[in-house]
Image (cartoon, rainbow over all chains, first blue to last red; front, side, top):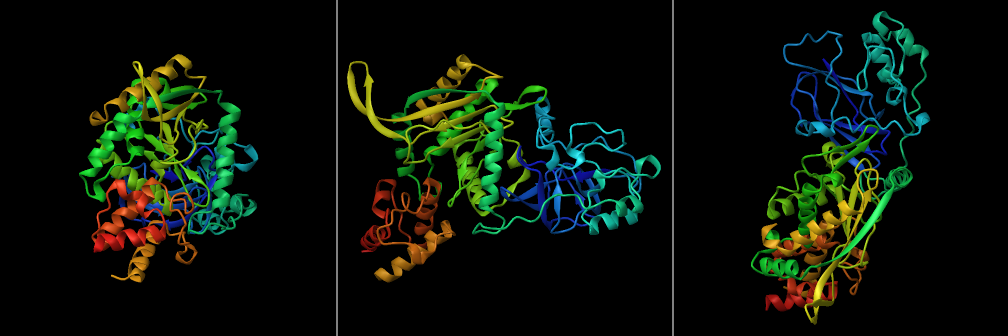
Length: 412
Length: 81
């Protein structure tokens, strides 16, 4: 039996509001199934399952604000005794199983303000049988009352056998101070721009506090890529056209696959390199706000596939319907100014990642080739990277790899 | 197709691409990207939608010709003729 707990959907997340169940008791679930929708500061997120089995109970109420790590549902593995109180080792891993080296990087943000978190998320190990993300054993009556009063069972010290939480324990507990529903000032359901600003502020302040950034900038000749893109799109109907942004994401992902120190997560145990490149694509929201959902396996997708996924990702980012894996599994972020705007962008790394690439707006500038000056499309690319993991030499190699990839766009 | 028909079609597709834009707030000379903050993905989605709705395939080189509502109405009308 495993308790499916509210996952952490980013370094800045403390809790989420359960707004929709996609499962009911008795349903079979598989890894990757969307089981619930949770409203967060980053909009409504579809929560994916990390367990395989059958839903035994739903342990959280619609409309309730659930702390990260608190139980959402109980899922039984096939053939398992539903009433067993045995604890499971299936701690929710927010990483795909193929990325073992980077596992454990998430959901262990021990440096969040402690007072804002329920005890389950604290870094101190507890002697009780329960583990992170799992509810303690509890009596049925205790669970009913806890749900009614919106009390996090995992935050209680049970007085029953084996630390089991009894009705009296729940009665004695006060509701966990998880916070009130935020005032919705956004124009879209599930998207609260004031809350998102707070989330961005928290994540970026933490990044600047903890990550010793260094920055490298390179001006890249974009004429070959611009010409190839124009010629390709001229032969295509609008719905098959590519954007320069897709070339930027692909080139960066190819480069990240070559320079290991740019791709992965940094946690209390240090840097964990990720084999696959899941490119966080920064999407600006009109009216303010920014999300950077992950585009999985960006380095190995064809440009057409990558473009289709990017279009889908941007659409869902705008409408506030991203998936939990997209919120947590990015291994590097790419942010592009678009067609117009500033020449260069030195971006702030999104923890727990260790690098972010900022593309300025492409512009035509004088460019020297041999002895001649001619107008060429150029783009200024800025790498912000984590000095705990790499230094300028590796960073320069990474930028050179982006440059090289953009010189042969037909091979991207 | 009259100017009014084209205007309505353009505004409907624009607000589908960018649901937070109120069609009543779109000025004749508002620049889609500079003023209404469409990004390159939004702009492409608008071009796709106009193609599907009106059958007018707008090449990339002509993107500046639909940069504002008034420009777009003139351009699309000319493409119909």
